[in-house]
Image (cartoon, rainbow, N blue to C red; front, side):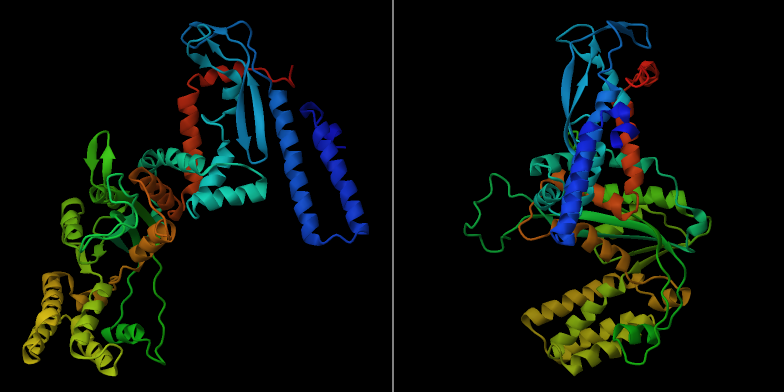
Length: 500
């Protein structure tokens, strides 16, 4: 019987749940109860049994009575204070921890709580495991949905405010965790080191001074305020040599084309930051991302290794990259091809109908020139066509703008060289991260974020996408224990109720 197996833990309540469950199952066989109902009933009973066992464990640990006085490591004597209780919410439900505290006198700071230290309890009411489960779900789903799901699954009642608060609290340890991370395994790195970055807007909470929701907006005023988040990634990849013809066939999904295995990006590390105030000073998110990327590049880059800087045509990204990342004979700056193609399609639609075969042919005829290092000739041709077709008004402005974009980035459009060297020329890694890290969680219908809430979510989601969640949880608990329980050696003096 269960009570005989674990006699020290006062397991009679757990034994009662087990006995009732076995009896209920016997009756379920007779009554032809469906399997899903049996499954549901067993889960409820297992949770109740777990709660009884956990409470028995707390009782067995005891309240930590170390006598009328205790001596701190510095030799100072502290006095036992009246016994008190604290609430602890675990995955099994609510429990109460009885404990004695020690300090100078009642009403002053409690300096040592033996039971709290023995159990390594968190600062708040939620157990570390429940905090972890909460945030594993919170970084993927809306807070309200998480609260409802855990209520339905475990019978726990947690408010949205609690989940949001713990999300921000957990994220406070993210920066220190990243700083102590070792470099990725050199043996698993690819030949080419790639740095890529992008910006994505996050819908923010309407300021109190803003016009009320639904009010008439002035011309050009947007309904929702967004704040840009910068996201960056450093990864390695092996060279992938291909011809312009092979790439064009893949882009246009030509029938009969022979698919080629694309090397997988290895050991990706992401960072995401919002511009915000820290200690009263404005911290620019893009600067923070580039600083972290620069540290990672310094940590990982091998002597003579090629460093490819790959991103879109945003000027501030190029400026910051020049300031923060290395520039030497082994660095290559590449404009994402997926930001060139839309300009060619836009040009095609100035002269041909959208969706027409003529527009498709227009792009397909000019793309080989771009991929073979002749983008300058394409720009000249587009301008000549604009003159010949006498484009005016909006069409003329669009042509001028797209030609200016291409011309401004010619130094990063040497695709003939890039293809021969096997460099990546598209930012699928960072584009996917923008969608996954930001859009999939933070741009759902009706969502609005504060700066603090958005930054916390970005911190935790990038840790998760980096594959560091378990390591971060262990690091956070270790750091919390160091902060909450500075007298770690005194734990050896706490006798257990079982040993007694």
